[in-house]
Amino acid sequence: MSARSTSAAHRLSLGQPSAAPSYALPSLSGHSGPGKSSAVPAGSQLITQHTLNLSAPAPRLVDAHALLLLTAEMQPLLRSSASHCLQQTADLSKALAKTNLRRDEVNALEPDVDFETAVRMETIGFHVGANIAQRLAGLRPPLMSTLDVLKFVCKELWTTVWEKQVDNLRTNHRGVYVLQDNAFKPLLRMSTAQGQSETARQSKAHLAYPIGIVRGALAQMGVPASVVAEANQLPQCVFHIKTTGS
Image 1 (cartoon, one colour):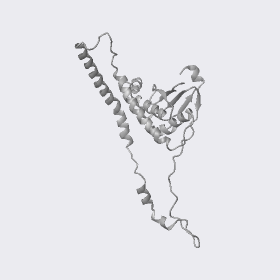
Image 2 (cartoon, rainbow, N blue to C red):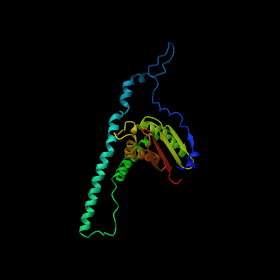
Image 3 (cartoon, rainbow, N blue to C red):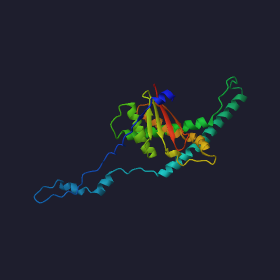
Image 4 (cartoon, rainbow, N blue to C red):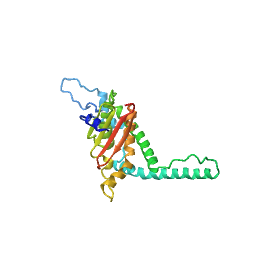
Protein backbone atom coordinates (compact mmCIF):
# COMPACT_ATOMS: atom_id res chain seq x y z
CA MET A 1 0.00 0.00 0.00
CA SER A 2 1.39 3.40 -0.92
CA ALA A 3 2.23 6.03 1.68
CA ARG A 4 -0.59 8.19 0.38
CA SER A 5 -3.21 5.47 0.78
CA THR A 6 -1.84 4.51 4.20
CA SER A 7 -2.11 8.03 5.51
CA ALA A 8 -5.65 8.25 4.22
CA ALA A 9 -6.58 4.91 5.76
CA HIS A 10 -9.00 4.81 8.64
CA ARG A 11 -8.87 2.53 11.62
CA LEU A 12 -12.19 0.77 12.09
CA SER A 13 -13.77 -0.42 15.29
CA LEU A 14 -14.73 -4.07 15.26
CA GLY A 15 -17.04 -3.71 18.25
CA GLN A 16 -17.96 -6.53 20.55
CA PRO A 17 -18.24 -10.12 19.31
CA SER A 18 -21.81 -11.07 18.59
CA ALA A 19 -23.38 -13.28 21.21
CA ALA A 20 -23.96 -16.88 20.25
CA PRO A 21 -27.65 -17.69 19.66
CA SER A 22 -29.37 -19.20 22.71
CA TYR A 23 -31.24 -22.43 22.28
CA ALA A 24 -32.27 -22.74 25.95
CA LEU A 25 -35.83 -23.89 26.57
CA PRO A 26 -38.06 -22.54 29.34
CA SER A 27 -37.91 -24.42 32.60
CA LEU A 28 -40.30 -27.33 32.86
CA SER A 29 -40.20 -27.38 36.66
CA GLY A 30 -42.74 -24.61 37.14
CA HIS A 31 -44.88 -24.90 40.26
CA SER A 32 -48.23 -23.21 40.61
CA GLY A 33 -49.60 -22.09 43.94
CA PRO A 34 -52.88 -23.19 45.50
CA GLY A 35 -55.93 -22.27 43.48
CA LYS A 36 -53.89 -21.49 40.35
CA SER A 37 -53.79 -23.57 37.18
CA SER A 38 -50.46 -25.08 36.18
CA ALA A 39 -48.67 -23.14 33.40
CA VAL A 40 -47.14 -26.36 32.06
CA PRO A 41 -49.41 -29.05 30.54
CA ALA A 42 -49.34 -32.38 32.32
CA GLY A 43 -47.94 -34.15 29.26
CA SER A 44 -44.94 -31.85 29.19
CA GLN A 45 -43.75 -33.26 32.51
CA LEU A 46 -42.60 -36.31 30.54
CA ILE A 47 -40.05 -34.16 28.66
CA THR A 48 -37.01 -34.24 30.90
CA GLN A 49 -33.65 -32.62 30.28
CA HIS A 50 -32.21 -36.05 29.51
CA THR A 51 -34.84 -36.50 26.78
CA LEU A 52 -33.97 -33.12 25.29
CA ASN A 53 -30.28 -34.06 25.26
CA LEU A 54 -31.06 -37.24 23.36
CA SER A 55 -32.98 -35.30 20.71
CA ALA A 56 -30.15 -32.83 20.11
CA PRO A 57 -27.54 -33.83 17.51
CA ALA A 58 -24.22 -34.91 18.97
CA PRO A 59 -21.51 -32.26 18.37
CA ARG A 60 -18.56 -33.29 16.25
CA LEU A 61 -15.40 -32.18 18.02
CA VAL A 62 -11.68 -32.43 17.34
CA ASP A 63 -8.83 -31.77 19.73
CA ALA A 64 -7.28 -28.35 19.13
CA HIS A 65 -3.74 -29.69 19.55
CA ALA A 66 -4.36 -32.35 16.92
CA LEU A 67 -5.44 -29.65 14.48
CA LEU A 68 -2.31 -27.60 15.23
CA LEU A 69 -0.09 -30.62 14.61
CA LEU A 70 -1.93 -31.39 11.37
CA THR A 71 -1.51 -27.87 9.98
CA ALA A 72 2.15 -27.81 11.06
CA GLU A 73 2.86 -31.00 9.11
CA MET A 74 0.86 -29.87 6.08
CA GLN A 75 3.62 -27.74 4.54
CA PRO A 76 6.45 -30.34 4.52
CA LEU A 77 4.08 -33.07 3.35
CA LEU A 78 2.69 -31.02 0.46
CA ARG A 79 6.18 -29.86 -0.44
CA SER A 80 7.29 -33.49 -0.74
CA SER A 81 4.24 -34.27 -2.88
CA ALA A 82 4.82 -31.27 -5.15
CA SER A 83 8.50 -32.15 -5.55
CA HIS A 84 7.60 -35.71 -6.56
CA CYS A 85 5.08 -34.51 -9.16
CA LEU A 86 7.51 -31.99 -10.63
CA GLN A 87 10.21 -34.66 -10.86
CA GLN A 88 7.82 -36.95 -12.74
CA THR A 89 6.99 -34.13 -15.15
CA ALA A 90 10.69 -33.40 -15.71
CA ASP A 91 11.45 -37.08 -16.38
CA LEU A 92 8.60 -37.27 -18.89
CA SER A 93 9.83 -34.15 -20.69
CA LYS A 94 13.32 -35.63 -21.00
CA ALA A 95 11.90 -38.87 -22.39
CA LEU A 96 9.85 -36.98 -24.98
CA ALA A 97 12.86 -34.90 -25.97
CA LYS A 98 14.91 -38.03 -26.66
CA THR A 99 12.22 -39.39 -28.99
CA ASN A 100 11.93 -36.04 -30.83
CA LEU A 101 8.24 -35.88 -29.94
CA ARG A 102 8.68 -32.48 -28.35
CA ARG A 103 9.99 -29.33 -29.99
CA ASP A 104 13.11 -28.07 -28.26
CA GLU A 105 12.46 -24.47 -29.35
CA VAL A 106 9.95 -24.03 -26.54
CA ASN A 107 11.83 -23.66 -23.27
CA ALA A 108 9.92 -25.08 -20.35
CA LEU A 109 9.62 -22.95 -17.23
CA GLU A 110 11.90 -23.88 -14.37
CA PRO A 111 9.85 -25.89 -11.86
CA ASP A 112 9.24 -24.04 -8.61
CA VAL A 113 8.58 -26.38 -5.69
CA ASP A 114 7.79 -23.54 -3.29
CA PHE A 115 5.18 -22.09 -5.64
CA GLU A 116 3.48 -25.45 -6.21
CA THR A 117 3.43 -26.12 -2.47
CA ALA A 118 1.86 -22.72 -1.76
CA VAL A 119 -0.81 -23.33 -4.42
CA ARG A 120 -1.80 -26.63 -2.82
CA MET A 121 -1.91 -25.19 0.69
CA GLU A 122 -3.93 -22.17 -0.39
CA THR A 123 -6.41 -24.38 -2.24
CA ILE A 124 -7.00 -26.46 0.89
CA GLY A 125 -7.39 -23.29 2.97
CA PHE A 126 -9.84 -21.86 0.43
CA HIS A 127 -12.21 -24.81 0.85
CA VAL A 128 -11.87 -24.71 4.64
CA GLY A 129 -12.60 -20.98 4.82
CA ALA A 130 -15.58 -21.22 2.47
CA ASN A 131 -17.19 -24.00 4.50
CA ILE A 132 -16.62 -22.26 7.83
CA ALA A 133 -18.06 -19.00 6.49
CA GLN A 134 -21.11 -20.84 5.17
CA ARG A 135 -21.79 -22.33 8.60
CA LEU A 136 -21.25 -19.07 10.48
CA ALA A 137 -23.30 -16.99 8.04
CA GLY A 138 -26.34 -19.19 8.62
CA LEU A 139 -26.56 -17.95 12.22
CA ARG A 140 -26.94 -14.26 11.38
CA PRO A 141 -28.80 -11.90 9.01
CA PRO A 142 -27.31 -11.27 5.54
CA LEU A 143 -24.40 -8.82 5.36
CA MET A 144 -25.20 -5.87 3.14
CA SER A 145 -21.80 -4.26 2.47
CA THR A 146 -18.20 -5.25 1.84
CA LEU A 147 -17.13 -3.56 5.07
CA ASP A 148 -19.63 -5.67 7.00
CA VAL A 149 -18.16 -8.80 5.41
CA LEU A 150 -14.63 -7.75 6.44
CA LYS A 151 -15.80 -7.12 10.00
CA PHE A 152 -17.44 -10.55 9.96
CA VAL A 153 -14.11 -12.08 8.94
CA CYS A 154 -12.20 -10.12 11.59
CA LYS A 155 -14.56 -11.13 14.40
CA GLU A 156 -16.50 -14.31 13.68
CA LEU A 157 -14.12 -16.16 11.37
CA TRP A 158 -10.95 -15.19 13.26
CA THR A 159 -12.46 -16.19 16.61
CA THR A 160 -13.67 -19.52 15.25
CA VAL A 161 -10.38 -20.48 13.59
CA TRP A 162 -7.74 -18.73 15.72
CA GLU A 163 -9.62 -18.05 18.98
CA LYS A 164 -9.23 -14.27 18.95
CA GLN A 165 -10.27 -11.22 16.97
CA VAL A 166 -8.10 -9.23 14.61
CA ASP A 167 -6.32 -6.48 16.54
CA ASN A 168 -6.55 -3.80 13.85
CA LEU A 169 -8.60 -3.28 10.69
CA ARG A 170 -7.83 -0.38 8.35
CA THR A 171 -9.15 0.61 4.94
CA ASN A 172 -8.81 3.41 2.42
CA HIS A 173 -12.49 2.96 1.43
CA ARG A 174 -11.39 2.11 -2.11
CA GLY A 175 -11.34 -1.66 -1.85
CA VAL A 176 -8.07 -2.06 0.07
CA TYR A 177 -8.11 -3.48 3.61
CA VAL A 178 -5.31 -4.22 6.07
CA LEU A 179 -5.88 -6.77 8.84
CA GLN A 180 -3.29 -6.89 11.62
CA ASP A 181 -3.02 -9.69 14.18
CA ASN A 182 -0.35 -8.98 16.79
CA ALA A 183 -0.29 -12.57 18.09
CA PHE A 184 -1.25 -14.75 15.14
CA LYS A 185 -1.81 -18.22 16.56
CA PRO A 186 -0.08 -20.27 13.79
CA LEU A 187 3.11 -18.24 14.38
CA LEU A 188 3.16 -18.19 18.19
CA ARG A 189 5.34 -21.28 18.66
CA MET A 190 7.38 -21.01 15.49
CA SER A 191 11.15 -20.68 15.96
CA THR A 192 14.47 -21.69 14.41
CA ALA A 193 18.04 -21.94 15.67
CA GLN A 194 19.15 -19.26 13.17
CA GLY A 195 17.33 -16.39 14.88
CA GLN A 196 14.24 -14.27 14.34
CA SER A 197 15.02 -13.10 10.80
CA GLU A 198 15.43 -16.66 9.54
CA THR A 199 12.30 -17.72 11.40
CA ALA A 200 10.33 -14.93 9.74
CA ARG A 201 11.65 -15.99 6.34
CA GLN A 202 10.68 -19.63 6.83
CA SER A 203 7.28 -18.72 8.28
CA LYS A 204 6.18 -17.35 4.90
CA ALA A 205 5.83 -20.91 3.62
CA HIS A 206 3.17 -21.57 6.28
CA LEU A 207 1.05 -18.50 5.50
CA ALA A 208 -0.47 -19.92 2.31
CA TYR A 209 -3.01 -21.93 4.31
CA PRO A 210 -4.34 -18.94 6.35
CA ILE A 211 -4.38 -16.87 3.15
CA GLY A 212 -6.59 -19.51 1.57
CA ILE A 213 -8.93 -19.51 4.57
CA VAL A 214 -9.42 -15.75 4.38
CA ARG A 215 -9.84 -15.75 0.60
CA GLY A 216 -12.29 -18.66 0.71
CA ALA A 217 -14.41 -17.02 3.40
CA LEU A 218 -14.56 -13.76 1.45
CA ALA A 219 -15.51 -15.56 -1.76
CA GLN A 220 -18.26 -17.47 0.06
CA MET A 221 -19.67 -14.16 1.32
CA GLY A 222 -19.68 -12.69 -2.19
CA VAL A 223 -16.47 -10.64 -1.94
CA PRO A 224 -13.80 -12.11 -4.25
CA ALA A 225 -10.41 -10.66 -3.40
CA SER A 226 -6.66 -11.13 -3.61
CA VAL A 227 -4.95 -11.71 -0.26
CA VAL A 228 -1.27 -11.27 0.63
CA ALA A 229 0.20 -11.91 4.08
CA GLU A 230 3.51 -10.86 5.60
CA ALA A 231 5.11 -11.72 8.93
CA ASN A 232 8.26 -9.68 9.44
CA GLN A 233 8.01 -9.48 13.24
CA LEU A 234 6.76 -12.76 14.68
CA PRO A 235 4.20 -13.51 15.94
CA GLN A 236 2.65 -10.46 14.28
CA CYS A 237 1.01 -11.06 10.90
CA VAL A 238 -0.49 -8.52 8.49
CA PHE A 239 -2.98 -9.44 5.75
CA HIS A 240 -3.40 -7.10 2.77
CA ILE A 241 -6.74 -7.60 1.04
CA LYS A 242 -7.75 -6.03 -2.26
CA THR A 243 -11.25 -6.72 -3.48
CA THR A 244 -11.64 -7.69 -7.12
CA GLY A 245 -12.59 -4.79 -9.37
CA SER A 246 -11.33 -2.08 -7.01
